[in-house]
Image: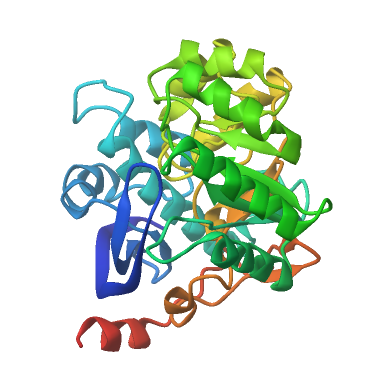
Length: 358
């Protein structure tokens, strides 16, 4: 079997009815895109997509004619020979999108779900609902209702945003969240790199009483010393790494003591091939993996390794996505991995095409 084509298909779906934001970015539009890796035997690998120009240009040129089962060699071909050797940035994320589509393809060729090909440590993984964004008109009652709605949907862990409001308001938001959730639901907070170390430590100390599972991305992404200072100062674990690239970036994060929980994103960091290398590095330092990103890929990553902690999930939380993507099964706060070959991402392409053409 040989690869014959690599392509990106995008579906712009218009404006969100209610834009939302974190501490740095506002999201206003919705849409989905997919990478497809085609073969001469009619089997196609699919995953969520990225930069069309890069993927359909230089990356495709290095894959056409190759055997899709050669995982390590194909990753090396995508990483080398067509760009300056910079191990960060959009090119790495594009490699990650294609690498994950290749894993979907391998699963379909071999008749196995991806998590088994990657290691097969377990077949269900803890999941948390990611939400608690800032929105116009969302006060403390609305925030509390949103988070308790996640629990009603079956989650036993939830995450909310901080860093995008004045200090007292953010502390009040965390307090309201804990009071609404009660003591038995895990609560995480995510600052999206909002603060310097001193500000992050001040905030972390102010909310430690609310028994947080982790404090995510407290400092600017290039401030590893600051993040390490936050790790040393707080009892709450610090989670970070979602916008880090490759094993080398995560090596620096880990060796500098800048994270207690490693959140390497299986797409951003260069794909599941590279994510496994990072997980092994984290394991050597006795650190758990809690990948950022969509649960369709993240669940396979967490299920594959013995230091997989929990997966970020939007399952059942974005109605506009649920219209097009078959949901993963959530039971007792855990995502059940599909037995279908590959990643098991079910996509209603006909519905997407109709929606994108409106």
